[in-house]
Image (tube, rainbow, N blue to C red; front, side, top):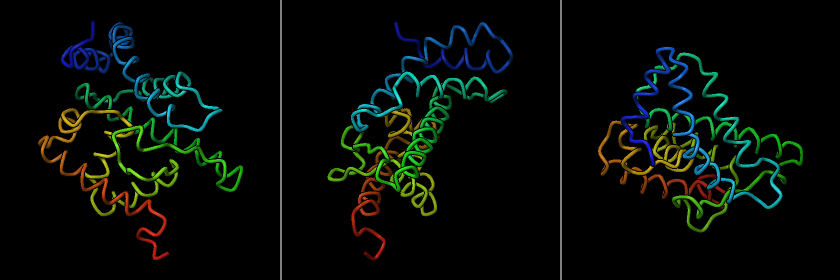
Length: 193
């Protein structure tokens, strides 16, 4: 039986207050969602990818536990931070692989596999990260929407909850961000090529 958002929020707050038993109860409730999101991203990686789903989830989880005294607001805040950590780990891994092979070995992720950001493109994670950084300079909220939906696996409703905006605003930002990223990630998009 899945835990409610309220149950997860209560356990997060108890954990923040120093209750180690809350962490033990929280772990199985959030671990499966983290595995589901990681499995989704790893399915888009090239065959033979060294990083495995369980390793990615474990690394994110260890970093979350090591975060110390984060003042967790709620379940959505927890998964937003998880999305940021997952993105950073995947990007760091992609950059490390790319630097070893002058960019040729960077893992690719199909955005068609996730909530589609870019329908006809198969950009690598480094290019996506660079595009998201550029988008954040233009519109930080749209960049956050993409990060939460794509890397965090959050629904439109959950993204709205995290960002404290309406569902309609998230849907509109998501649509405009996809168009912006499509242009940015295209061969000649935005770079004068």
